[in-house]
Length: 472
Image 1 (cartoon, rainbow, N blue to C red):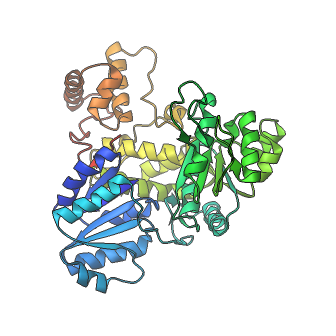
Image 2 (tube, one colour):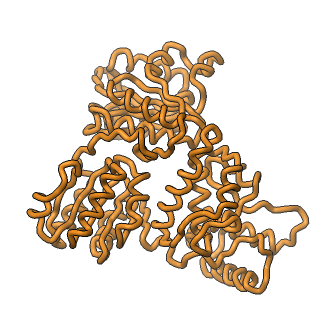
Image 3 (spheres, rainbow, N blue to C red):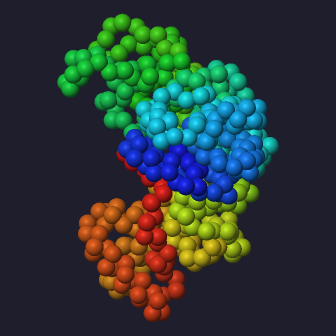
């Protein structure tokens, strides 16, 4: 969950820094309304907006922003006097009004930190807009996806989402949940590739104490946790054949038994699954049970790869640039035509996720207020090898001096750490002081006329994560 805080005086941010960051929440601090539309346009239904309103003009600007972006998350308005603001609020804006005081603000932040239930986000249909619950695009393919999401969300049938890695399958699952009748219930995610096969059954169905070595207490599985809500199973085709059989029985009977247990437990969930394989081809190849396929794929949603909707790339670039420029406090106005043309021509095998990671790194390294080809720090082929995991370090050609190989490796690692010198030093196995010494040397060399094709490290902000905190 991301918490966006708009407070010109930054008092709420300082309190959130102490209360929300230890709970693992991402906080973005704004002091003006200007960058807010771009952030809300790519926000999800789980995100939270906290705004402090002091003047009528501010209230009007925020209201217009919420209307234009159709933000579907939860909004809290902090005001000096809650009663007049609540009476004057537009009916289409759903928000909770809180009168400002340190005690009341802390109480609100502790509610968020504890994960207490928030007001249900209002459903929104935005097929005519560029964004839809965090998904971005106006291409025919994406408008068809948005329409299919709305139709799927209106019922309670099982949904299977398939497409290449990085195309946004989990965002689609979240959108289905957010605008469905189950939106007040939990959304629980289970990734078949993230859990060892020996533990997957316990994670799915839970276990009783003593069921196996190390089972020292009862545990609820995701089928119990998602009761009356939505269960999202990612990378479904990676599920082992025995677990495919057990999953089929649960879908058919709506009952399951914990590992080591004997009592059937009823479950009331809406099942949404995703896979980066074509499930029908997996069935034909004997990798996936046909009877399970017909159960989970009542509604199918195919997510197109980025190469099939290149007309959406400029829009995606604009949204990600606005998001990371606000997060990293970089005054970026746009992209030079040559840089846009270069990005439009790249293959992006890692799809939207790779494009987002690439732009985050570009924002970190940019020197001016326009993104240029030099700021891209990209080779037409080498970075694509890192698809799905972010861009790779700069390519290293044979015959380079050892010091140049070291320089490229250090700068590439610093990019992947998004400018976090402590993390980069940890990955490199050197001290932060040593890293700072080397970066200073590279900067001085660059000023003295080093290779223009090399990335500039002088653009790296010294307090990159000052207003963007990710704990956990």
